[in-house]
Length: 171
Length: 273
Image (cartoon, rainbow over all chains, first blue to last red; front, side, top):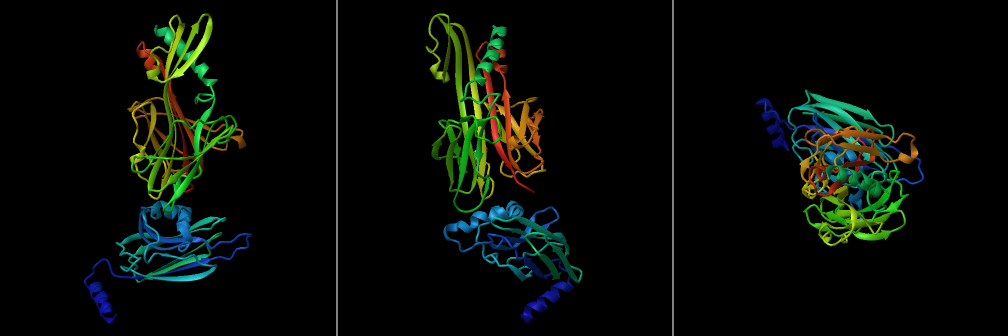
């Protein structure tokens, strides 16, 4: 641990562009009053300014559902499916996980470590998409610049399937 | 001869539109898939096949499935599970076991003949190979027409692929320049039309959103193919859309051979952005 910290500091000094950074994403799943409720499927990813996916950070779906039935509804996260999901094999190590009940979740990522790949300097968007069975779909976007000069932060507030989503990071 | 065959073609068009099983101007032939963008290791697309006026309502005739051919992502044929035909629609399932794009098509190439024998009007249908001897000696006012009709739709499990989209080179076909399962409302999509493999310029193509029953405006976008045989499709909103084009008897006019009519229809799903 100590060693890698020193290494980071050193590479920082010689101005290598990719300095490992940290990102923290919080995602809020709102509570709903509906006759039939299922936890939403959620995809969290980073895309570049051209819309190309740099990293899929997390995919919450019914990982353990029998007969592979859980993967059937991945396409309902339409934006993520078109940009990344349809070319990925699910479940994916270090990316996919089970769906989550209403509540607030904190996710931490380290650049260069699965699932957050090293990001070339540029403008990016953090995107969070939620799709709920017998429910709706919502995508939130937080633009950010990387590497962060010091730190980055942003938030977006959903109106239906997502509550507040935040991003904070430093590089 | 030239004039006669043109007239004959016109007459045949009229004759055609009264025939139930042949997609003609008055009716729309379609294959409506349950979904076109699918996920998972193993899926099924269920398809309704009908000939109707309203899109997509089963109200006129069930589509015969004799010529149904499904091409899988590797280019080989996929066997459908045929559920059957009711009065107004036929239904079948398409198993998707491989990742990639499937083409679901009903293509018919045939001939039609009209003639008079002993003062009686007769009609004959068959394949080109059946023609010799099919029209009896002594028949008068013989009019022949070649028909090529193709009705398609597409479905993709996982990421879209192109192998199943290769044209056959016979009749009127649509070559998707934009992948037919990567269509999104408000984003332009390009489709190229070819007749026997050659781009068709200046042809009208009709593009209509489903749900015609629930609106007063027919909502037909009439597009014209450019020099490359291409049209640009713009779906204002997400949904299932019907696309249709046909080519008249150009060939029959150029030669003394039979008149010819080639038609193409497809159902395309545009997803919300």
